[in-house]
Image (cartoon, rainbow, N blue to C red; front, side):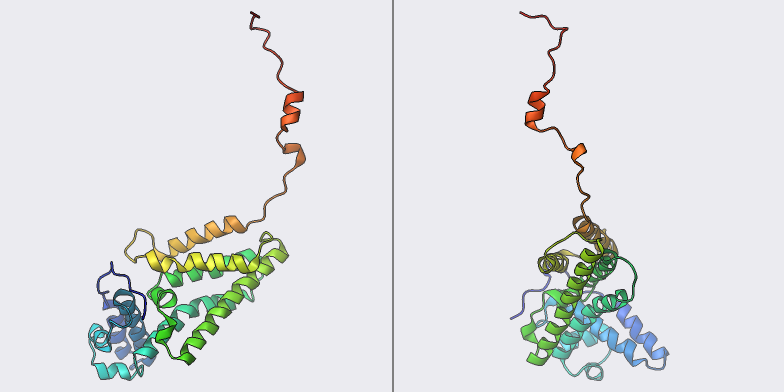
Length: 247
């Protein structure tokens, strides 16, 4: 059984996706635009109502099309959930691919990936990425999603190692650091609401700032700037104030 969806939300508007659908018709029946619209509306309904409480009829109604039309783009609801997973993870994977050719320090490249990670979790696909249970997918589909997630985890670890090597990241337990960052980012899906004061991009920037402060190498303390020890303070104690009289 899947975990409950975000009960505080109401049925999401699908006006923008329906608009994309109509614009797709104007662009010579653009199959890709329509398929993306189906997947995005499905992600919103899964997040608001849960996977098992969402039907293909709900998705078709939101797009103002017939249920058979949905089958033209996806064979079943399980495939829709799978596509939601893939759509949510792909921007993070794309960021990892992009930074491979970058000449920036490891920490800067890592920040780029983490920023995209945060925005992905705060997107329509965040619930599917983090909260939806893999057991609602076939063994093959679930295995594929685990492979994609492992790819992202290893990519983050690689950037941490490269950052430590080039001096832009302080020495750390790479595995635990990657787990801590992913855990913090994934939790966004539990509390973020699209109508909050902060946008997904602003939340991403805030998280990256926090992470960066923790990863930035500490400058070595100079002995000359160290505070006097207790013994030194006792040895060089303050002289009595001569302005005060003795009793």
